Image: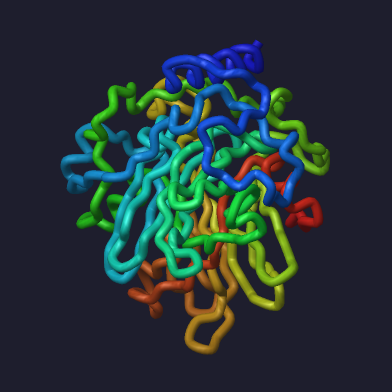
Length: 371
């Protein structure tokens, strides 16, 4: 029953966002894309319902203070936290659910802040590529359930989950992933009270704070067959959330179900010692219709364990915090030392992202699963 409700909700949202529908057949009309260049079979790219830009990206985002944003955001709501060159910005998932892409510039860095609800992938991508700054929009199409974006300069098509060019001028190229974190609003505002927060004054009439995907991530569920089409990896449940890391040619997935029990993983990937933190307090964006009422799925942070020439080893320390065994200093999920000998220190964030297992495994089948 939940699967049926989720399916209907997704398709209804697609039609609503598009203001109509279009054939599921692959069509090239209305595109300047060089379809002769592609690195995946075009048959793998399917219609998600909306036409080109039917889900409108935010090209001129506005920002408000933490205090102003707090009048609408509840503490457990998920947000994307991005820091660069002294600028801190927060992008509430309640807005990205309805727009999926925010083209922004943080300091001197042009970024595309993206979220694909069907894969639960919140990724920040560097918009600089081969001497150009690209602007991104939505194609209305999916590959393995994941959003396919396009750049407005060449109308090349890109896979959101991997940052890889699929079709057109930039087929075979890859965009750089920018380190970010998906955490609760409470975590973001406590750590960065002077942050700039994406405003819901977008110029579009959307019911921000609600999700059209209610029930989609129900435990035991699976991706919508019409949209997925990939080979499932049964080592984990399809809708298991995983924190993922790629260093060199090594890929590792850290299941939330295991992290929620251990609270911290001390591991090594690609020869680098790293720690994966998990803390409760962040709501799913794909459970209850009202985001603030959704179940707690927690949040993760992945960090280099090397600090000032010393390798730290971490353990949970109650109330969602962490403590290193070497100095007894206490740390939060953002990698900030908040008490003890190392207070004021910060761990270097490792580029990582959270996915549903099915969405990560279809692109990185050689992944090691942390135990």
